[in-house]
Length: 339
Image (cartoon, rainbow, N blue to C red; front, side, top):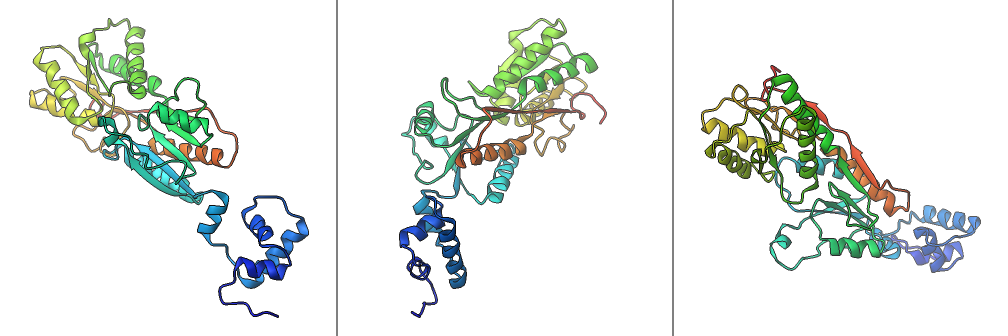
């Protein structure tokens, strides 16, 4: 018998199994059907030789990278920690590596840099506004697996979406401010322009006002941008313009920090003078003074579900066109509750 080296090759397997190298390759990569007996013979020889296919060569043969890409505008802020935790947990469990790329630079008029594409990943997770519609359309046309988070696909494209129940959560917390704390002059801080989460939360705000026959005052709606400094400026502007309000729904928790700082700087007490409520239930929400009443967003679960939907696409399994995860109101001290 011919001596086998310490590192057996696919040629050694083919020779001892009395098949071609192409047959062994088809068996390893499951790229074409083989007779059951042939497959058993190849596997037996592989076991006897302790032969293990090289991962890189196997990936080249199957055109798979075993890698998932995540595109987002930014990776700063407390919001992204649970999102990344959920994404990493499920991708790792499924045997996929994770590559992350921030597209912030391409939003300033620079030529987009396609760091993550169909050439180095098996599929892409796209966080809101991290990829332009032209590229989404191209990826969809070539059938490349993509899942959107907190963003609907461009019209006519069938791309799965994972998001949360923004409108109902916003309506519930504004209801609470009105019904429990008798607030009737409630300001709302919008997020960034054309942000679906912000738009849906604003709809919930309007829904609650209408339900309680409270007239809408557009002077109470200002742009905070889901940003602490932007929210501080917006709240200060309301105060400087002498706009009367007895509560602020900040739209997200990062904005709540800026709002509460602005109110304190103006000598106002939260929640005695002004109730404050946020959205997300970020890790610091319970640590603020007073602790922040907010809407708990299942951020980690969004990441987990998005990866699950993406892996279904990669493995040619059915996917859900739109997954909407429920939110939950969390009552603390900033609204006036003694909790």
